[in-house]
Figure 1 (tube, rainbow, N blue to C red):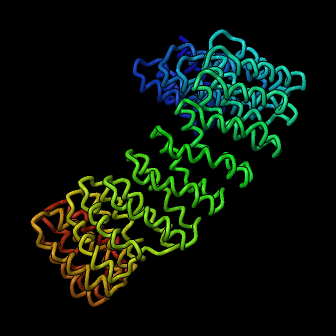
Figure 2 (figure 1 turned 90 degrees about the vertical axis):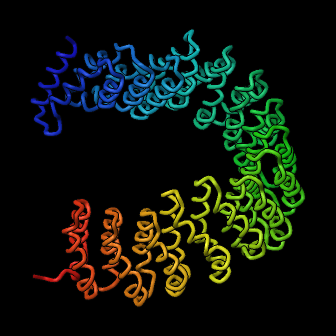
Length: 603
């Protein structure tokens, strides 16, 4: 009965509004589908909550439609969408005067067992709060936060933590004091998940609290949190540490915040040390360089040498970022020796993380120091047993090239590239291809051609389609780097050899390569070699080859000029319109219509 009433209301609302964008039948179908047995159908309807509400109008939406939606016990996947959609429904229920119709269901969703639903409900309440006046926040949102903070279910108290920051600035001074007291209670809650949520919420809450309250309330809480007996709570403390440090004056940063951060860096739980290593660059940004070198650098060295591979991986990925906050002398003396050990680390993830960022240290050091300390490490990485590690180095070569050039370790670089270019994993080969044009610019035409030219041609006949496609794009990029003469003498002959390949896929690849290279060769090569080859391939025994030949003719027609196109391309495309294969005929017609207009003789 409820769905029928709502459908009738939707019909009435659409007629009253006389709006052309509301399809009554569609709205009716969506309303009925909300209680459908299939989850996909219900999900599709829930995604259209705003559309349905627009048809029903504010009164029907808040009094009938939302209760109708929320009375259904549903899957977490659908509740997640409901929580998201409610955040944008304030206007559909009539504005902030009717905010309770939005907050009530969101409060219920904040108590759900599924964490993702609770998080989305909190985000929606935050979104709604930004549309409210201070009066509405104090009248409606403040009681909600206070109520949720006192409920028995931990899920409600955990969700409440994320709402303090949006509520605090809009309430009276007495209410702010009450909120800080309630927040302190949540930081001491008996359930670790609630305490963790409270610590995470501290990052946003401390931004809206005055400095006096920060000193009085947050510093003691922060010290207490850093000593929590649950590592899941201490794990998120470093972010709060950085947030507080940004707000305090230098003296308090050094005396109150830094000791806690250093304590977390030496935590007995490796997950806590991992979190510190992950955010250590952010921590360095809020302290003076001298303080970073004297207090933070020794701990960063320990993190780089940590017994847990996960911690070393996290610290290694921040080596370059950390080096920017200390002097070159400190980097050479303290950090570089650690890198020497990490290059030979037994864990490939540690080596891979370091290989990703180590190139970025070249601009931090000058040329002589890079040659002395960094290049030997790079050479070791190029000989690493793991393909991903070598790949990470090759993909970041541009950072070193700007400082010292690539020539000095090219002898080690080329064998590594050749090996990676023939790796059994096609994704590895694909990654190498993408970096070839950069290497070409650095190595020069003669050196590159003698060492890697043949490999670039071999990729054209790779068994993987994505590799062949990337190889064509690579040759096109190399043609722009080395010029028409190199393309005509080195690439074109190798490509044309594929004309007689027994696999039609390779002949298709040849045609696509010719189409891509047409604008990169001289006119003589284009007219003497490429165009005749494509015309010959229009008579291939395989229809797919003929179809691609038509596409290549269309591409070449813009490179050879209207006169030659009118004499060669257009007549051949017209002949292909009578091909025995219907797809070829259709494609030839399309290509003919898209050929340059000046190439088609007027009747």
